[in-house]
Structures are given as structure tokens and as C-alpha cells.
Image (cartoon, rainbow, N blue to C red; front, side, top):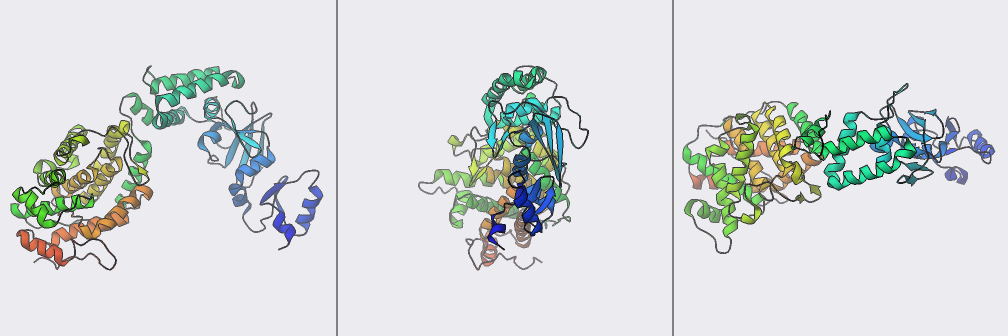
Length: 493
């Protein structure tokens, strides 16, 4: 490839000064035309792909000085038909491979619009006012957005920036009314903002705005992830492991290991002999009363029929949330600073993941519970419930222990074995949670929890010492490390 070909950009246009040089480049096979006045040095790629990867550069080349506005400024991407809407001195449509630039008559850059390349991006206030203007798409999709979508956008602003964000938006929009001839659109915007702030009655059309106006807002992004996970779970084959008949003593011994492992995952680590003394003999370790109460409190919940004997489908949403708060109160009762039994007041996070905002906890839980209740298979319903509780993170601390307790309530109430998450698979369990949270990838978590249930089914918990010996023999109490793989003991007779 020559130096001249290297100097040619990916996309470029002809001008009076460059037309001869461009013609020569096309003749020499160093460039090709892909649209009127638009050329590329890429001689092999599909023209639609070239335009797509350089779309805003193309807009800047073909419509310099215009303002990317209307729905394109709100959505920060082309519409479904590949069109980009810009405000310009005249109306025109520039057809491109796989896309189009829709020039709509309107003012140039206004206060708040931001420069980008040789065009501008409309401010949020301007774009919302423009999207509220009546419009009918003669070709392709509408340049504006539906009222429901505007409601969703405003609710997102409220969710992210609080009431002040909507106040600022309203003030910015008011200043733009004369330039945009948007008095009617501003009245609508003002009304919607007042409704979301609950200072005036408004007939909303979107679910998220209706929930906000009713005082039960939720996190729609998390809800979308819940639906995505639900779809994946529904596509899996049934997962059924029936529990063998179990004595009351075996049930309590298994509950002990459930509580022990659940606390170990959260970093509350005791030797198993210490935890045994704490739970069964009331022995309190010196200097660790709160940690000891965590173990005892978790054991109390995972061994109590009022918690693990009922499914989420057995309760109304109100009753389930009451049971959830009561379980947290029992588990975290030794840590009054964590406000046992009360929803969190500040945002919490793990790594880079920020969980549901405190204002959205109850509303998101209620929406999530609706989805969980629709899962027929008890094992997958348990996975879904544990994920919803973990993803909302409704309490200041103790969320993991609560979510695993209610996960086991689902399988136990259906006559299936308890799901243990032994120390040996702790890292895989956390990896699985991260994968389902970030990418809705369920397989890793399913494999870990399925292993935990099969482990429970294979161990005879009737005698505590024998159960402990069996768990040791398959490395269940070993720290995760390279070279050690989880194993299932020989099948019980």
C-alpha cells in the first residue's frame, strides 16, 4: 500500500479543492464512492458497515453546522431504520447505505447544545421539547418519541439525579421556549415533571411513571435484567431432585452446615468445631460476639419452618416482604448498627456493582417477586429469588445470608433437598453471581447450586459426626484453590 493510500481517511467528501485528487484516487483503486459526495478508502467492507462505524463523522461531513436533535439526541444512537435526525435550515433526507440523515427545519445551536466534530448535540431540555412536538413519519420512524417514552426518560432523570435534576431540566426548557416555539410542549413537560414529583395529579401512561406517582418506584433496568434471567431459566430442562426421608435431627444438622457455609461466604469465618459450639452449646468465642450471633441468627432462620417451610408463592407480596424483614431481623439482631429488619438507607455496592437505590428497594422487590412467582420449577424459582434478593440488596448488610435462606425455602417447601454452598465452591458461586448480574449468564450459577443440592442429597445428616466426616472427605470444607475440585460422595443407599 502506498503512502498516498495510507493518508486517505476512512470516510471523506469531495470539495472544489479536492475533487480532482479524489477522482484520481478512485481511478487508481485507492478509494471508492459509497454515497453522493461520500467516499471511503476501505475497498472491501460493506458500505453500510462503513457508514455505521463512522455515522457521526458522516453527519459532520455532509451536514456541518447542524444540530443532532429530537430522538437521536435522547437515545444517543440511530433510530431502528438507521436514521439520524438533525435540526437544519431546511428539510431534506440524505439516503446512505444502511442509514439516513433526516434534516428537519429548526434553529441552529442554542444555549446548552454541545459541539462535536463539525456538528452539535442538542441539550436534553431542547431534545425533550422537540420530541414532544407533533410529528408523523412519512418515511421510517417518527422523529419524536411517544409520551410514554418521554415519561420514562423523565423518571430516569429523577432516579439518577433526584428532584433537583428535574427542576434544572424544567428551568433549562423554559429558557428555550421562544427559540423553539415550544410553549405547548413546555406546558406538557412541566405537567409531567410535576406529576413525577407528586405535586400535581397527572394521568401517566408508562408503568414506571405510574409506579413513581403511586409512591412505589422501581428500578426498570434491574427489572429488565430479571426478565432476561427469567427467559433463560424457562428455556432450561426441568431440574428435579426429590429429598430422601429425613429425621428432625438430620434436618437440623443440615441447617447447621447451611448457616456455617453461608456465613463463611460472607467472611464470618470460624472453625467448624467453633461454630458447632456456638450453635449447639451456646459457647461464645472471646471478642467475637457479633460474629457468633450472625451464625446463630442464620441457623435460627434456616432451621425454622416459618421461614424455610414456605414458598414465595404461598404468601402475598406484603406477607413475603414482612417475612423477609423478619428473617433479616433474626440474622442481624446482634448488629443493631445495621438496622435489623429495615430497608437500607444508603446505596451499597460490591466491587463496581452498585445495587438498587434505597428509594427503589420495595418497588423493585415487588416487581421482582411477580417474576419469580411465575417460575414453575422450584429449583429455578429458588435461583431466581436468590438472584432478585441479591441484586436488589435491600438491607445494609446480611443480604447474601438472607437471599440464600429464601433460596432454600423454595426447594425445601417443594420437597427438594437443601442447596448447600460449601466453602470449596465459594469462588465459583461468587463468579456465577457476577455473571448473572452483569450478563444474565445463568449456567455457572446453575452448576454451582445444582452441585450443592446433589451434595446435600448424597450426605446422611442423621449423625452429625458422620455427616462432617463425609463433607471433609469430599473437600467441602477446603478453601478454594488450584487443583481441588468439588466431589459428590458415593450415592446413599
